[in-house]
Image (tube, rainbow, N blue to C red; front, top):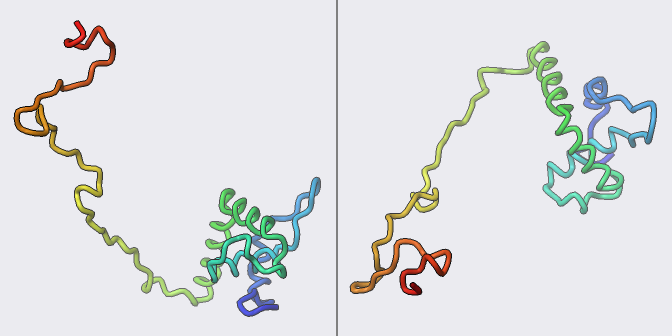
Length: 142
């Protein structure tokens, strides 16, 4: 077991909330090994392809993380762990806060419309408001 890997107690708490292995088709590799790989990646920030070999194939770890993110498994695990911690009195809800900080950007960064251009970028020059789309629209060609 590596530093930062799940302890036996942590694993026992998570195990009931993990999806069961399907009866047909290919079988999933060990959930504990894959979870440790996901946690390692989240903790260190390494690219998926650079996961240590002890966590199995990087693509397996990545696919399991992606699948569980999409099907709501992570949400169910979070709710279950929070509920148990709350029931045991280990969760202090008075310490929870929501950050609603806003950051104002410069108007040009927000895609604000610029003032409409005049009929000439330099004094004395004029141009049509829109470019002709066909030769028959061009007054000079007529």
